[in-house]
Amino acid sequence: MNENWYRLDNVAKVFLAAHNKRNPRSIRVSCILTEPVDEAILKQALELTVKQRPQFQVRIRRGFFWHYLEQTDATPEVSKEESAPCPSLYGGAYKGVLHYLVTYYRDRINVDMFHAISDGNGAFLFLKLLVLNYLKLKHSGRFDEVSLGDTASSDDREQNSYDHFYDDSSGPIPHTILNKKKKAFRIPGRMLPYNQLRYYEVHMEAAGLLKQARELKVSLTSYIGAQLMLAISSDMPIRHRKDPVTISIPVNLRNYFPSETMRNFFNNVDVSHIFDGTETLEALCREFDLQLKSSLRPELIKKQMNRYQSIESFFLTRMVPLFIKQPVVRLFSWMENRTVTAVLSNLGHITMPENTGQYITGFTDFCSTDNLFITVTSYGNDLVLGITSAYSGTGTIRRLLSSLNIEDSNMYMYATEVIR
Image 1 (cartoon, helix red, strand yellow):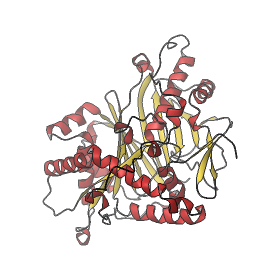
Image 2 (tube, one colour):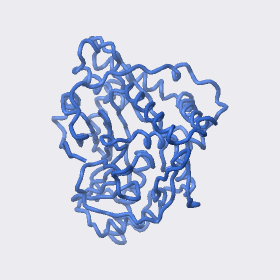
Image 3 (tube, rainbow, N blue to C red):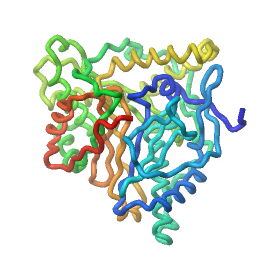
Image 4 (cartoon, rainbow, N blue to C red):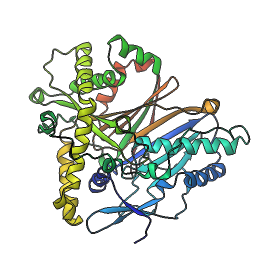
């Protein structure tokens, strides 16, 4: 075994067990420039970036008890985008060595990444450095003194923060976390054939959407989440009215722990509502906001993380061979997915050094999914919804966009029904 290896985090192990043809557990982050991308310069920028941030120069290897990450000297490539976002970057069908891919199309730089090696925040950190290096090379002398202000050490960026911040003396888990989750309402309709996914990229004015949320005295995540719930409820048959509509929301644990890791470090919290037909947008927004804020209390977030980490740290769990663990983890992942109607991930406001703003239009992101996954990203006044859907019908998406007054915004379908 190569001496330069380290263990996967517990979330990565789930992605390894649960990835499939429709949902290869990939994420895409992109930067849109004001000018066409120069492929040769992008290649130079990528070579420089991986020297500064070698954390993603790894390959996933299979051990007897767990998979692990091993550093590799494989050279990353740059190519013109020719396929759908979020391609498969691991498994039998994948012929590459590295588990990320850099592509470009016109004025857009894309980084696709297997979710087992990083989350959306880590991927954006990599993309931002790649873009800055590209601009330094493209506009020689203009940005020599510009940096992202990242002072983290290599060890900090490679840290398995789940394990590092695990506290087995934190006391009993609150009853609310231990409660068994209910099976959630699933959006009805046929799935797209051939394991296809639809991708929609929707650009809106951030100021206008924030104004609507503030008028209702709720967060932007709660406002969009409540609107999404209402859009989903319109497709709900009467016999399923007793089933909760559950929106899963990834939480960046770096906001709760002093971590600068570029690997996975997030948990999910759920917001649920059982519809009775009397709901108003204002009431649902406030209920959503109240549930979300309650779930985001630091003591609950920390105990939730400790709970999941304690399962991995249990002696008997560690001693079970991988060929037995994998099917069990896959089963639990499938059961967990049945308790979620859709996922809403707000990665927040993306910033870059002020001097670079004249060359950057915005940032976007997508995540592969088994059902419906919506990301929210903003840069300046450009707020982007990255919508990924496995469904052939588009009713829920159309109702959501209509409720957000999307007719006053710029929307286009990035890709649709592309066979992987």
